[in-house]
Length: 327
Ligand code: HEM
Ligand SMILES: *[C@@H]1O[C@H](CO)[C@@H](O)[C@H](O)[C@H]1NC(C)=O
Ligand SMILES: *[C@@H]1O[C@H](CO)[C@@H](O)[C@H](O)[C@H]1NC(C)=O
Ligand SMILES: *[C@@H]1O[C@H](CO)[C@@H](O)[C@H](O)[C@H]1NC(C)=O
Ligand SMILES: CC(=O)N[C@H]1CO[C@H](CO)[C@@H](O)[C@@H]1O
Image (cartoon, rainbow, N blue to C red):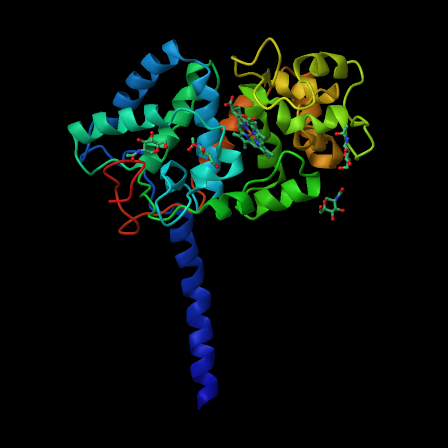
């Protein structure tokens, strides 16, 4: 008697599971999510971003990185924007986040949208739009952002440390870190190209210059001709100086990141590591030798994928009134 019933349940699962998964994949995000509830929301973000970017163009890089950090910790749920409370330290207080900038800009855009349509547009969606606008305003690619993310209520410092790959990660660790978010090896090669804009602090990579294996040595994978340039900028104990990711060109979104990597001039070990895997190396070489023939298209596609990682939709989470505080 039990046998056919188990079989029936098993078969039911076979039929229902793929449907459930399809639903999960779509995640309930939609292209015109705010069309009725907050028309013009996207245009407002774009308009305000254009203003902010003309005053402080270096913030663009921080917004792109912020969206990445948001999505890798608890999914793209705005958790990176929450302040610590008396009881618990939030993601903002984790080491990788100490260098994020521009939170006030997000708060300003949020208050404008709250005036326009209170309690409707999530902080997680604002961040996804701001990252897109930041890249396209630096003459990078444009992509359509599926919307409808809701905001999480939890943000934990230790989860940021556990989920964000460190700059000294090797290729195996990087691939595993991306795979854990449903992103493949190509996404890793493509999204690492985000390092075509912005700056890094000397302390992030200075061990590669001064003490790579604890013997006062340099990283052999770093172009020896590049080392004097970096040493001149970064003294051993420097904790404040910024170095351009792609010197001379860090404000333009283009394929020069890949060209530098082929020359052994990636700033972090995680950048150089892209040469240690057949697939990522092939991607780096392709973009370097074809002036980024597919980079923009690929970046747009991988950003849309990144923006869907672990999103809250429907009735999950909330729409925060202030991006730094849960309701
Ligand atoms: C693959 C693993 C990655 C590692 C290990 C990594 C690590 C880092 C580190 C350590 C910094 C320097 C922060 C500082 O010193 O201020 C940085 C900067 C940056 N990262 Fe990444 N990152 C990774 C992937 C990504 C991805 C996927 C994106 C976006 C698509 C991204 C975008 C950026 C940007 C734009 C900056 C410059 C930020 C600024 O100028 O303020 N990174 N990254
Ligand atoms: C969040 O924290 C920042 C930095 O500590 C502070 O400037 C800001 O006022 C806080 N925001 C809120 C809404 O409490
Ligand atoms: C990468 O790092 C992990 C852990 O730190 C180590 O076990 C592994 O051997 C390394 N892989 C490579 C390819 O270097
Ligand atoms: C280099 O690293 C080793 C091991 O971590 C440490 O003992 C040594 O003091 C470092 N040297 C310098 C010059 O920082
Ligand atoms: C932007 C931000 O909130 N940065 C914080 C990162 O963490 C340190 C302490 O660990 C804080 O002092 C910063 O304010």
